[in-house]
Image 1 (cartoon, rainbow, N blue to C red):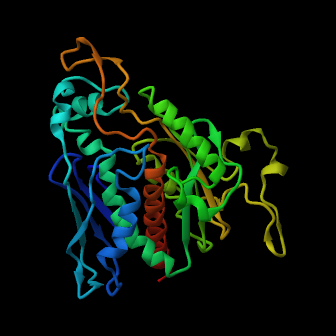
Image 2: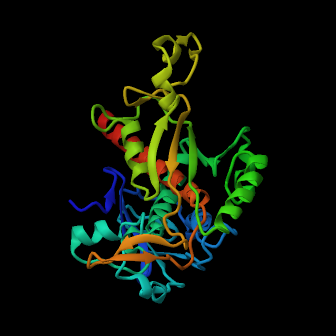
Image 3: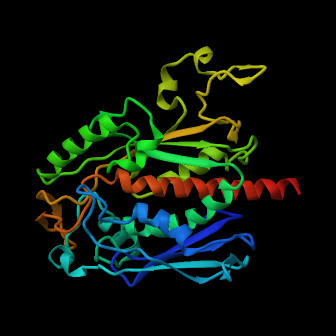
Length: 351
C-alpha cells in the first residue's frame, strides 16, 4: 500500500506538492459532534508556516486552512474531514537551473530511481511543505485528547552544538529557536546566523514531553507505543534518530541503575521514558529526536546530473538555516495522532 496514510482507527492521508496547487489532508475516524473551527487548526499551522524568523525560509505562505468536508454548523459529522491549504508563493522557476541535477541530501536521486519521474519544483512530495497536512490533522487530534487531559510540549533541546541547560516551558514560544532555555536560545541564534552567513546550515535535537497519558496504551508486539511514536517521528523528513527516556545512555548503565523501581507512590524514576513493554506506564512520556542539518544550502557542492555527468551545484532559493523550530509543531502533531489512534484502539479492545 502506498505510504501516504498514517494511523488505523484515526487515519490521515496527506496530499500535495511543494510548488503544486495545494497541500492538505483527509482525516478519517473523527468522532461526530466535536466543535471544530478553522481557527482551531490555523493556530497550529501558524506555528509551522515559513517566514517566522531570520533563520527560517522567507517563503511567504499564509497557509490558510479551508474545510471542504466533514464539518456542518461548526461540528464534525463523523464523515471524512478534508482540509486544504492553497499554495500562494510557489516559485518553481527558481529550480530551472538545477532541475537536472541531484541536490546533495535531498530525495531527488531516490525518487527518480523509484518512480522514473520526479517533480523537480522544490522537492515535490518530499518537501517539508507536506507536513502542513499533518499539522492540520494533528490540531484536530490534539483538541480531542486535550479534553482527556493529555498535553504535549516539544522544543529545541540542542542546536549548533549548544545545549539547553534549563527547562522553562513558558519561553518556548518566545524565541525563534523554540528552545526551552532563553540564554541558550540567544547563543544558538548567534551561532546559526554566523553559519548561515557561510552558506551552510545546522540541525539539532528536539525533545518532547507528553503528560496525562493513561496507563495501558500500546499494542504488543509490533504496535508498541514507543514503536509507533518512533515510526511517526522517523516519517518526518529531517529526522535521523530517536531515543526514549535514558535512551542511548542506557547502554552504559547497569540494570539496577536503569530499572524504574516502584514504591507505594508509584515509579521512583523514569528511565524508560513512560513506556515499558511497549505500553504506557502513566508516567510522563519523554523522547528526543535527532534532526539533520537542512539539506538546501547555497554553498557549492559536488553532484551528478540525470545523465551521470559530474556537476557543481548551488541550491539557491529560500531555505531554513535550521529547521528545528518549524519541526516542533510537526512533532507535537504526530504525537497527538499516535495518542488518539491508540486511545481509540484501546476503547475498541475493551468494548
